[in-house]
Length: 227
Image 1 (cartoon, rainbow, N blue to C red):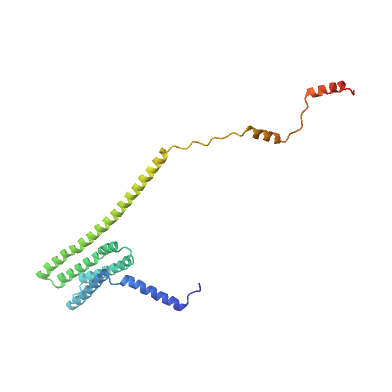
Image 2 (cartoon, rainbow, N blue to C red):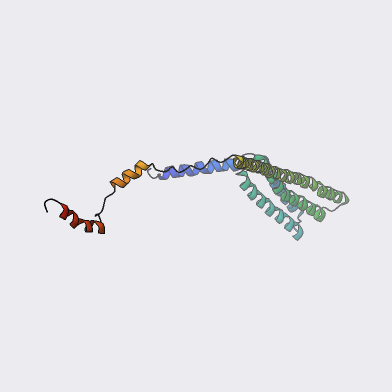
């Protein structure tokens, strides 16, 4: 085929970029969750700036949460490519991937409340937030168990199928061994006429003279009338 021109290459590139972006960035539940976490972290930035409370522990907590959000978004981007082929399995894996981001945001929020807005009411609220993180953990644990059960069920079915095929093969081999084997073919001898024809057709060499012929030769000559 003729080489593609520059406009065709550019069009193909933009089509590929649009298809990939739609595949990855199509509105899904995990993208909404990540967008919500980003919005909450932006709000935390403005709240801490308004309180003028960028202390070292608050800054480290927020920076760590931003790193976790970025890494989680990167992994979700990778898994979203395979989601159309295995929707349930990928969703269960995404439940596990999103757990650290939710824990990080809750911890950063608790650090800000205790460091900048310390009160009895906020302390009780912090304890409630920490215990509410168990909901996300149990959700991720349930997804792990479902994924593990699906893998185990698939392996068990595969082993049962292989065992049945092995038993069928063994039964077929046993039946073939029980069947009587056919007698071996007997070798037929060639008829005598064939031997004679072969003997007659064989080239004959020079005849050998015996001592009797040599001895009787002169006698026959003497007994002839012409002699």
